[in-house]
Image (spheres, rainbow, N blue to C red):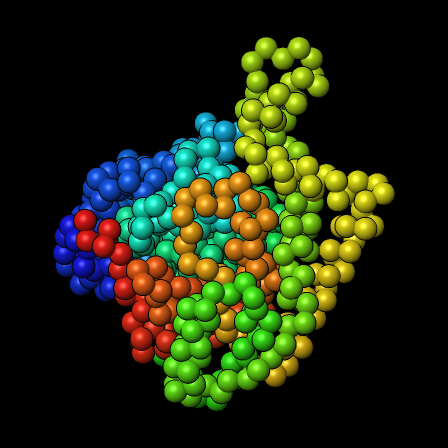
Length: 490
Ligand code: GLN
């Protein structure tokens, strides 16, 4: 129960309560909008809040229910990362470049959630253009971690993670290019799923690095994510990289026992970067899963140490190309009184993009330049293939992999802000998964003091149901996912 009221907190329980007419969607929506108004000034997890749309959607859901036309997600609220285009409500990507932009269409994910009857509460804060691991790179200011307001929530989906942890929304959307769903989920003590590349449509999701970007659900439990996946996933004729597969019910295998499953523990994840208490949480989780019937297997991912350099070359290269559209003419912020066209381009882009985005554009342009392409971009693509092969070999012997999500718990605001290389290391265990296109899930394990720890499960292609099943069984057994920050009591 939330501090302020008598509403259950998980999406699964809310769905049951709505179906049993214990309260209406309008009441549930009011509850969250009140909390956002009262508490979000301390967290800064929302860039826009949209009460008018939310109440209209809630009322429509209540009406549909009264007519006997409600679906499983009708009337349930969610928070939407401000990278998914929404008509009517501005879509900023946390950039000055798009600070007042209104999209002419809804992203496929947004449309799917609306069609399922869900209620959008607002758009969440993030790192600018999804570049970052701390949510300090937002034009709209940093997000604070509800577990300790002096610490970062992780990034780039930090607003989504903080909103769920603070109980300002039951679930949220996120996107993950190199860890941006899993890393903030880990640092905020919630559960997040980065699906297989191509599982969730990227149409209307502002592009950072198109061969890596993937949208996915964030929430309080694996069960909640499974419900959300049922409407987020699916092939989309508007996204040529979305995979054509028959629809799945992502909740259908949650209850299956773990006996007979083989869980690999990648040796290379136990490296010098991993803090000892997080290593202990991972070991404890492995022992719990073993008790639940799984077999533990030592595995090796020999090229894991190359994931960060390969990722930052590939992601920056794609970003430099994707972000060329923000030229102050076709898209984005335009400077005052340009002298000529070159001045218009350069000043609009210098004013519109923050420091980290500019750094990525410079790196990306460099690695794609004639003379450097072979040495950097091509080499990174070759390393990408080696990383992919490491995972393929591992999955010949095991069903999933278990390891840490991040090397440390949430760090202090400002602590790594002037040190991009240390910041990039936050994603040392997550970027390889994007380079290989695999699904990955982060869920809370044993905390370190007051700070959450993320456990990462990595699956084979289209193995989301397996990840959700293991996470659900672990959550039933341990209850770590139910730990709540004191902030949630407010
Ligand atoms: N932190 C990584 C980066 O800054 C990953 C970001 C993401 O997944 N969007 O690029």
